[in-house]
Length: 291
Ligand code: 8HG
Image 1 (cartoon, rainbow, N blue to C red):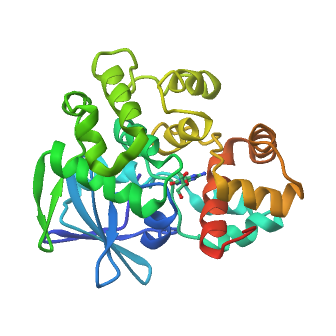
Image 2: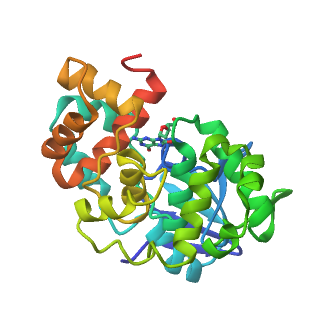
């Protein structure tokens, strides 16, 4: 993959289509990116702090270099994929066309599987600001200090070993409520090798879902979020309140069980179901559709 890339001290200026930091970082798939006063976003992934800004057709990546861009960020931001094609296919459906226009710069991130597992266990029956706060506290207390950027300190997400040593009481003090026991079990199952979270992504989607659901606190929605946001399962179709509402409002026209909505979404959008879900989630949540 060749990019039209200019390196200028700690900045890279890259021409990328279908890339909008606001859409990417605020569409619900990640919790560790925050906007700055200049409308850029700063976050941390794979132990590196990065700042991302869109200026016209250019994306400016700060605090990085060409090697890290190629080694980490190309995959993280799914830059090898032509989102123009994904959007064209989905836009044949008139409802998706609206949702795709609304979130035109969304890309599905390839995040760390352990971080995604724990983050989406925390997300169950929770709101995004509280999810973000809990994750930030967990990283500050149990991750490692990586560095400062714009006068703010950044910490890595704890490894399975690091997190497995944290007690349930300590976890509860991070604001995770009843999910303390689930995080505790999940971290221990990964640390002691019961779940091989870094090597199961090659299983077919349905088998992988079953494997993930062996972890307490991981149901169908959480498992599909983990598969989609960290294991490249783009046929996953996580259904939360917003996706349920938008699917019922536009397609099904009546109260429908989660299982039926999932079957409908996977059948309708096939190997693009995960992308369709993300455009719909962002669209429904920002516009309050079906509320
Ligand atoms: O990207 C997401 N898709 C779906 N379907 N659900 C999500 C995403 N992100 C996210 O946080 N959720 C869930 O929505 C978790 C939680 O139940 C709620 C937070 O708004």
